[in-house]
Length: 462
Ligand code: HEM
Image (cartoon, rainbow, N blue to C red):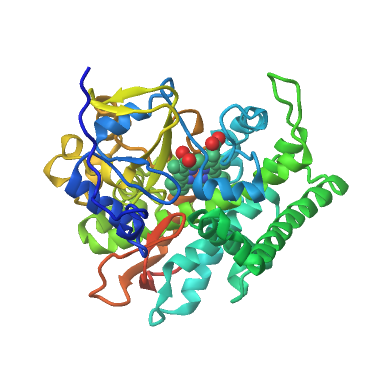
């Protein structure tokens, strides 16, 4: 069959499209190309010539696990220096992925996540107390405080370890090492490998940071072995769990890979979600009012309990709509298993990379109509959400796809619902600068840039 040409922005001899990239905000550049060249285009970049797909129908097609897999390349491949074949960075077929996946799936199931509610509540209360003490005239650096929240929650729930981030202006050494490790992983991925000789100092620091991460995780394990906690958490699931398929347990090294992986995968994604959600709510007073009214009628003034978590459908819709417009992981990568044709006309070679631009496929007017770019939580209320995702499978993919979809989704969801509910219950929020318009900052994930708000207490904290 005849195949159609795939558009490519013109670029330059030798360097291809390297200089066409939006350095500050690659996502903006990729979305711009999608607006100009359509649902599929190719860029010639230093590390290869991936295809970028951005319509619902093409994203749906490349989500097919029989024809496509998740590749591990670029920054993900660099992160393997620190966490090897941990869940997020494992290549297809690596045995440790299967063992960890089977042992950990139940540990991330609804029952164990509910078991973490008390600890999540404790960290969320610390945040509410901090903001109450700030008073209503102090601008709050929203993304930083939500990152303290998500890191402390993950460390407490998964490792019984306290970073106490609210009590320090300086980051805990583990968090500083993790931040630098992630940034440098991204930088290394964008440098041609022959240049690495020029970056000896950076390389030494990179591997020292990895040591800090691994030694901290090792000491969590050692402490737990000396003093079993008598609680069922992810550390005990990993220490005691036996893979039903192979009868194997996780090695210490694999446990450490995954403990660090949870912190990496779970903190910025969830803090970005919360930050975008508050920004969008403040910008949409009608939705804001409905969300707060729901909390007032379902929870009232008393303490928020685990039973409330699935009784807040409007909050759930706000979070879904936030992740549609602002997916904190804005791309997922796929790779063809064999030579194939997509969209009935575009030929794709075996092992070729495809980047799904979720931030763009989530705006497809064929799925979301004329109001696709607007924030409208109503369309994400349970019944509507079910209808949408049944009629257009894969039209909402912020947690990834197939076997390699997010294992931490129930964890993130409970944390986000709890934090939204608690904050709306106790505070009224406003922009610090009333003229602020949502801007993005992109590292390995996206979050709002320069977003400050003010919090004034409603009557009496709970
Ligand atoms: C995988 C998004 C929270 C742990 C993924 C993937 C996405 C994602 C898109 C697939 C990545 C790919 O295809 O390469 C999110 C979002 C979150 C969130 C938007 C919050 C709103 C969390 C949390 C944890 C976590 C809280 C840990 C407690 C993981 C792990 C994987 C993963 C381990 C790899 C799973 C595998 O390949 O087997 N996540 N995530 N995530 N996520 Fe999340």
